[in-house]
Length: 253
Ligand SMILES: NC(=O)c1ccc[n+]([C@@H]2O[C@H](COP(=O)([O-])OP(=O)(O)OC[C@H]3O[C@@H](n4cnc5c(N)ncnc54)[C@H](OP(=O)(O)O)[C@@H]3O)[C@@H](O)[C@H]2O)c1
Image (cartoon, rainbow, N blue to C red; front, side, top):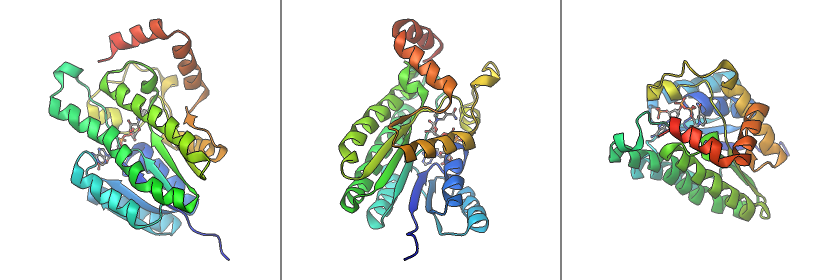
């Protein structure tokens, strides 16, 4: 019997880390379901991937900060077997907490907490019944430092993923949370943030982040922190929590 083709669903697949996931998964032979808001851009990505790697690439234009958009994606997850769910869509906010409109804070919470929670709730029953599958949630090293609501959302995702990993492993389903540092994508430009002060050594490339993440997933890692430098920084933050946390929060929100 020929090997079974995997199907992976990636949110935020039209740019940055999500696009790098889509490319890497298409290159290894997966069929794909790609999710983002901008339908035109998503369809261009899908056409490029089909012509480069073959395989089925389906697009779902959906806003994951809304109930209707999230339901479009949970319908897909309940309607067809998905082998790998990559919860990646996210954004940052430039203004501090009290300067951000509450509606924008709600929207960030919906996109980075409620949507991955709902997508996991839709995808996991099928995976657990089949006894195989994986979920890869994209958080951030910001999860380990007090960095406003963004860091808090990502901390929620780390905690949730660690618990899901423990509770799903014995039934053949793997859950991993990816915690990158600064990655060169559209993320900071979309926020309108000036990143000129960030030293070059702190920047990661999305293709490398994704390659390392998929290797960690293959090794059964639960919390994946790409690059030795960020693993070290994260360990230091844990060892000297108050000093590092105070410093980070002074620069943060
Ligand atoms: N870049 C970094 O330094 C960095 C570091 C750590 C963690 N992360 C995390 O990595 C993930 C990906 O970020 P990135 O850097 O790749 O950002 P990016 O280049 O700005 O790409 C974001 C992707 O998410 C989609 N998206 C945004 N809002 C959405 C919504 N409401 N509904 C559906 N899709 C939406 C965007 O497409 P549309 O605009 O068409 O919807 C795009 O495909 C995020 O969760 C982010 O928090 C990034």
